[in-house]
Image (cartoon, rainbow, N blue to C red):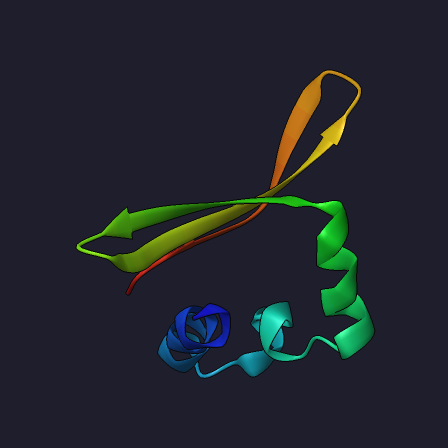
Amino acid sequence: MHNQYFRTEADIYNDFDISPPLLQTLNEIIKFSESLFLKAIYNDDIVGSVKDSNVHDTVFIKRLIVYP
């Protein structure tokens, strides 16, 4: 899902360097375990996701994807 959504964006601009998720290494993906993920479901399909991190009492949205 992750690559599918970001590939759509990269295709629109014909620039695959703007989508770091398409270029991530396995070690970078493993770091995701330090984050919280939330998903949006519609008719049993995942149609969106958000990744966040917490610093003290503040939540930062790191990545937001929605079904294209």
